[in-house]
Image (cartoon, rainbow over the protein chains, first blue to last red):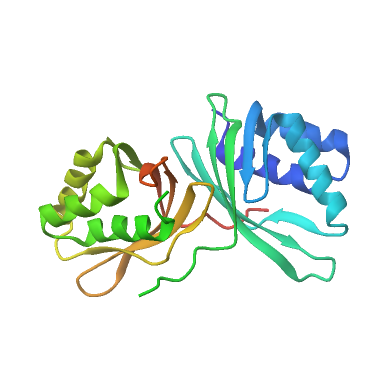
Length: 123
Length: 123
């Protein structure tokens, strides 16, 4: 199984890449053919659909950067890592935590993307 | 579907309960019959096995408290929340983030427990 840090680094690089060919190369390394991406707003299946989602996100948020803010915390093929979306002026628009699973070859077969952080305890 | 905050609150109460009957009552509310709990150290299937795991944890860490440190962040049946294990002297021995899924009736069918936090980015 590919090392989880490499997989997550490649996944993060796919979100940074502005060239479609480069983005697909990173996803080839990080994402299973039929991997499923789920967040609050959307659900897409397959590497090509994820490549398109990233492209659409870049188009919808011009000048914004989605970048990892941690390495991977993982065990037994389960991974967790954090990221944020940074505005052109440097302000952080959104932070999040992604939870993912690796398939047998190490590539991600499922990713659940949480926006924000868990709320405080209510008493 | 039961409200995610209630489910997570009942799950947290099960970890605090020292009476086995009370613990099972909380798990009845929070945990599916065949729910699967996975962390770095163990994997248990079913509500009764989880009740025993909690009991074993209490026995192995006398005077320690496992308690929630957040409410639930959730969407579409996916949940995330944080917790810690506190020593008798008040020091925090371990922190963690749990990722879970709700079944159709809202009870948890799977929980992946991460110990610690994702590591810093390496450059």
